[in-house]
Amino acid sequence: MNLAAVVLAAGIGKRMKSHVPKVLHPVLGRPMLSYVIDAVRGSSPKKIVVVLGHGRDDVKESIGQAGILFAEQKVQLGTGHAADCARGELAGFKGNILILNGDFPLITSKSLKNLVKKHTEGGADVSFLTADITDPSGYGRVLRNLKGGVEKIIEEKDASPDEKKISEINSGTYCVKSDFLWEVLKGVGSGNRQKEYYLTDIIEIAVKRSRRVLGVKSRDGSEALGVNDRVQLSEVEAILKKRVNDSLMRAGVSMIDPGTTFVSPDARIGADTVIYPGTYIYGKTVIGAGSSLGPGAWIQDSVLGKGVEVRLSSYIANCKIGDNVIVGPFAHLRPGAEIMDGVKIGNFVEIKKSRIGSGSKVPHLSYVGDAVIGKDVNIGAGTITCNYDGFRKHETVIEDGVFIGSDTMLVAPIRVGRGATTGAGSTITKDVPEGALAIGRAKQTVIENWSRKPREGKGKK
Image 1 (cartoon, rainbow, N blue to C red):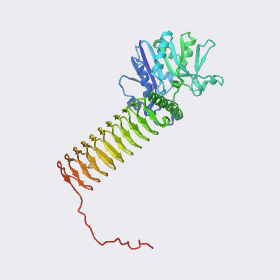
Image 2 (cartoon, rainbow, N blue to C red):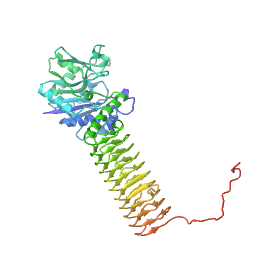
Image 3 (cartoon, helix red, strand yellow):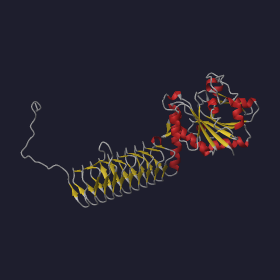
Image 4 (tube, rainbow, N blue to C red):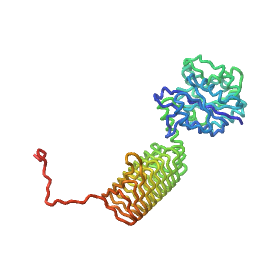
């Protein structure tokens, strides 16, 4: 089957009241356009054309260019004009063309495949996806004749009061024979209140020309919901969130409060993991079985092993974490952190671009950056790897079995040998040999029989 797809992503989105292109507004941490692209890819088209306009460079960068062609709508003159802008990229293509909007993130590849199937089996010239929804305001209504055949689609702004009562809406998703599409677009006019070229007009034109038209109703009306403002954005995210959370819970993941748990559709979470309220798991995160996450944790584009405990208000981004690791509470694991099995990262600890060996502990109030830490190392409270000299970052290496005393400043570049110890309160500026004790602090002076005297004018009255 010859199939191509055109995704309309050129709109300004005035009602979003934003400098960000509408299709790039996030839903569960991903631009809404990315969901549409995924659904389109799932229908296996031979070509995908994305029509760009407002913020075209940002949109192009966001979705990448692998397997995607781009067309430009320099002036936004409506959906019919936008679809026609893809004509050049699809020159010579013969087959069926899917056309859909980039602001419908709930659409699925299953529905697109069904639309194409019904279109092909029904010998239609043009088919489109419809849905019955409770509140159809803002959407184009589907007008049918007494036999149930489609007559036209009327936009909300052009609809009469009686037409606005119709609950069946147009999703904005079409499947059209290529030769008919390019022919019929020439007949679309702008004689409406908005003075725009509506893609919906191709339905009425097809009916008048006695061409075969099918309105294929979606089983899930939510797939037809688009986003025109931030209220609709939140409504769409709530629906997608429930889809994702329900699927995870049915697969064996426990959520204490699904309503306050946000998980990207790309995330993979093992069975018997418990997610506490206020937790966000975004990007292509993978979490092993039997883990405990939150409350209030943020985990993004990271890989966590089995039995990991991420405690209250911890932040993890672009990290790798082994099995049976404890993180937090109030820990910050920044990009490049690699935490091996059995490690404990405690409260108010920040790890950046560092490898922490298995069984090691960084219990509290420490910063570890640009470091390689071996196995079974204990990092005392208040330890800092001083990795930045104002110009470059330098590496700290701490070998297996080292004990770092509390409040140690490790001035990089530096290496602490296997089994060595640093005294509490030390500033270590030179390498420490294996098994040695390093102490680097000022000599203590004790003045006996001394009492604090109030400064003049500052004493008690």
